[in-house]
Every structure is written in C-alpha cells, then in structure tokens.
Length: 475
Image 1 (spheres, helix red, strand yellow):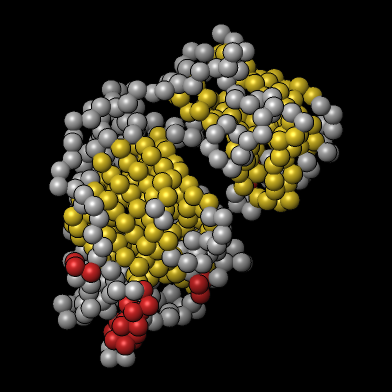
Image 2 (cartoon, rainbow, N blue to C red):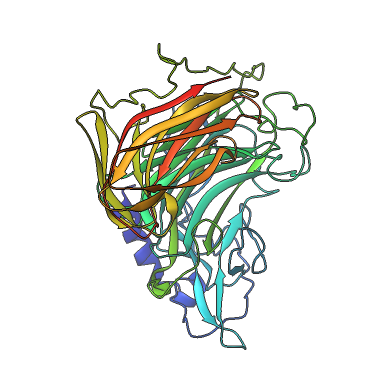
C-alpha cells in the first residue's frame, strides 16, 4: 500500500472513531497532565497491517512488526516505560504512560515531549518511551524502522536495543547496547549509529550527514543487520557503520568469549529524551509544540539460521610512512576529499560553520561560526596505531589570522573517547610556529587513535593554517 493510500485509509477511519479514543490529540503545554493508563483491546486495534502487506527481504523471514496502523499502541508488542527525571545521562524528562506523551495517530506512533511548570515555577518535562522487553525479544536479525525526528535544542530521539537480561555479562556498558539511530535536535542533518560494550567502555560510531534536507524534514529508514560476528548499520540503504571487533570484560579481568556481549537476546526501544549530557538542555528556541518523534513502522526479520562459530578478527595496524610519520598526507602535498574517512576529515557540529581547503602544502580552516562546543569546528585524522608502551611525538606548524586558541588531542573514538594525549590548549600567533608534544601510551593497543584539532568555541573565528603535521614513535 502506498504511503498516501495508507494515510487516506487512516483518515477515513478516524471519522468513525472519536479522536479521544484513537489517541489522535494535540495535548496542551500549559499543564502537567497526570499519567493516564491506556488499555488496548483487540477491537481497538483495527486496520493493523497483515504480514502479506510487509515487504519480503531476500534470505530473511518476517519475525514481527508493527505498522502503527491501529487506533492504539499494541500492548502485545510494546510496554510503556516509566522513568523518573534524571534517571540516566542527566536527562530532564519524566517518561510517563500518558496518552499525551505516547499515542498512535494517522498511521504513526508519536512520542511527544511536553513542558509545563512545576509547583516551584520551574520547567518540568515529560515524554514517551516504549520497549518490547519480554514481549518481542530475539537474538540476531535485521531491524528496520522508518521515522521522522523533531527539531529543537535539547531534543534527543533514539531507536535502540538493550539485552533482555542486562546482568548476564554485567551492567552497562558490559551488557552491550545497539543504537540503530540517534539524532540531536540541534543538528538534524546528522544521524548516528553506534554500539557500546566492554569495560573499560568501548564504543564504535558511524554517522550520515545529509547533503540536502534533514531527518526532521522527512521520514528516513534506519536499519541494522545483527549477526554473530558482525553488525552493520544502514540509513536509507547506505552503509554507515560496520563493527566486528567488540569485547566485554570486568575491569582488569579476562575478556568473555567472543562474540559476547552481542550473543544474547535483545529488545527494541524508542524514546524522545529531553536534555542530557550529549544534546544539552532546551533553550528559548526549542518549540515543544513540534517536539514529536514519529515512527512509521518497525519490522524485525531473521534468517533461518546463523553461523555462530565466529572468531574475533585480528586488528590491522596502519604502517608508518617511509619517514616514520603515522600521519598520511601530513605535508598536504596532495589534494583530497576532506569529507570522507580517508586521511584528513573536516567536520562541523553543534552550530559550527566553516570550510577547509588544501593549498600550497598547507590546510586552511575558515570558520564562520565557532559553535557551542570545542569540537564544533574540527579537523581529524583517524586510524593512528597506538601501541601500549610506546612514546610518541606530535609535531605541527600553525598560525592564525589573529591570536587565538585551539585544542589538540589524540582520542580513542572506538575506546570510549578516552584521551591517549590529553586535550591541550595551544595559543596560535600570527606567524608560523612549530609546536611539539610528547606522550606515553599507557592504555591497551588501539589501531584507531585519532589526532584532533578542535577549533570551535574558543572566542574566535580567525582563519587557521596548518602544515607539516607529524605523529611518530620516538621510543
């Protein structure tokens, strides 16, 4: 059935059923409604899509799905999860079971965030979260969801998965987590796909930045193929992240046999968070009348069988150049695409705006807006081999159009973002100067260290030039 036909059918049905019954309502923002339990009966779940209307996928069979074509949330699949304010990540919302926060309308599940005033006159936020725990748990498969996110500072929609028994390998992050989709409401042209695991905390993240439109301006399809030895993430059928080298262990203990922790049953959950460590808090620009996370469908497929006899792949460590430099194209003698994942990459986040250009054996960074965080304007090179016990030397030449600061570090993007070389403020002058730093690698071996030049939120947008960038082993 086409999307248009689907919506037309739902509209016709809505003339038969009262809006109060279907849950299609626009709640007021001036009150803090008491949570309302909604009982879903078989009669209410009219027009649920049958299995033969869901697309077939080669090599997969349909395990379960929800097209949200009924008149209420299907409680044979979902639970409304209740959580108090500040439960995790310093988030601000209370997750309720109210119809004002969770409702099915026009063929979509809507998770809506609301703001009101508490007894002390402070902003009070409620929102919705649903999960399929102990109702539709499974191990391995292809999960496909189509959704449209809200736009607004502090809003944080997500579709993700957690294990049914979080204690099997230990509490988070040892238990494992699969994030099919996360978008920050302050930058809705970027969607993230991530796994979390291990102790110390490891994570591997991919992203897709749209060249046109945003994830808030239209629906997009997010999917993950979860297999015993590999997890692949897609956005609109574009591969954005492939991971196969995770681990889990107690701190200081032996690793559990691979592919733990992703060899147990997981469940799907979806939520719209407000505030928190990553997105930051809402501000005066956040329009809560539009704070709706819309999910068109969730479909879970599974292969008839999976080969569970898998081994963890050996890490591939990049070789240094002939002169010992671990930085490729560190002399900027070659033009390259600064938006791909090969060698240098220039990125903008959280309000950062600017451009980069390789010219005359240097790279020029022009900032238009410094953004709200230090990494809002960022130049990086990943895949640096960091070997425990080695001593490294960082060297680069730089100058700025006017005196200003930048932050330099070597991070672990797949190792919980710890720092092998700590965030270090560097004051640039208006003349070329050479900067050198030494550090000892004390963590376990990592084939994906990342050199970062962070040029956001420093009080300046002055142009910066770099040349002769080197990272090398000196002991």
